[in-house]
Length: 196
Image (cartoon, rainbow, N blue to C red; front, side):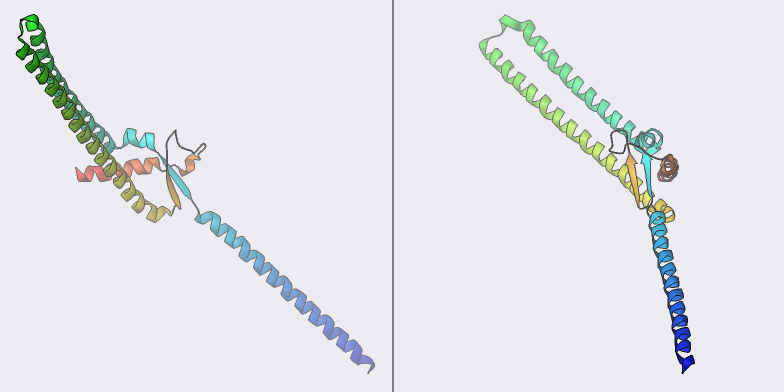
């Protein structure tokens, strides 16, 4: 009987040691699991950016779009200047007639002048709306090109976000390691050359 209490004490001590070791192992497993989750979260969340000013300066599609807009704007300005010169010639002819005009001729000249102003304003508005629509269509096409390229590009890179950076944006600092502008310019130019 004397040994029974000693044996039970040894067994109890053995069980305590086993429980302690098991608890220690479970605690270590839990720590490893939590640390692994933190590492996975940090490595899975990546943000890249591209510099819009650099893209505008080096993307051939953007340069061509600017040239199209400039050509349309010049054409609009030439047409409006020509129309204005024609109108100014008529006005000058009326001034030269001046006092020799009859009252009926003066009233007719006044009506013609009002029609000229309305026609000029109407044509100017038409041309400006056409230019605006053309510009917006070109912007939309460029944006779609960028989005399409970035969608394919990101299949390999796995960024969580790809942001546009321009000097007026809310981003105050940036790490150039995450600058994908050179890749974007090269990829867009390659794709653009294929469409030409």
